[in-house]
Length: 226
Image (cartoon, rainbow, N blue to C red):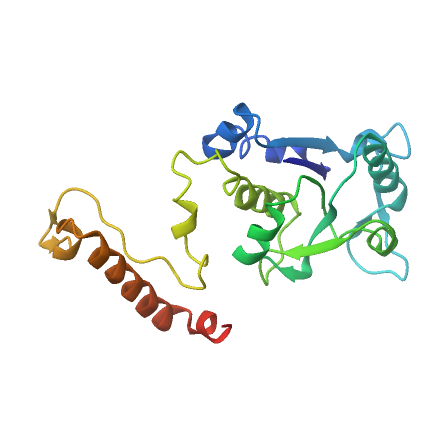
């Protein structure tokens, strides 16, 4: 999988892709994340990529020309499954979407900044708009990192135990059940006996019951989606 991220702050994204699971995914050749500095496509030698919005109002807007030049160049090099814009008014990102998109190969991800991007770029280029939550960030960079992480960990061979992702929260519309590790007794709180029994079928049933109960208590809306 290849994810090309267009941003005015590439340095903000260097760390998330240089450690842990995403680093291993890159080293294995399973996930390639490229940070593309939008200022390389600026309209002048001063690196200008934004301007005041028509109609007045606070906040700058990323201009059409730099984004169009950047996307045009990328699209001459390969075919993309989606050109994604990370925006608070996009479709809410969830595990189901991550599962579906993890089966694709190439993405362009546009990180908005300031007041966002010119609407005409959304009309001409963007094929999918995604929100990671009902709140506003300073820019789309952190949202792009969330997107890449969620997809990257689903790629076969990225996780040491590929079954781990299958038991994550939301994979079956349930939250994950409680988990425990050593010691068996910590400050008077003991690991449930069933987890020490070695009885795989009963453990599986217990985990399902716990996941169902936790979902009922914390996210009943997930059960209503079924």
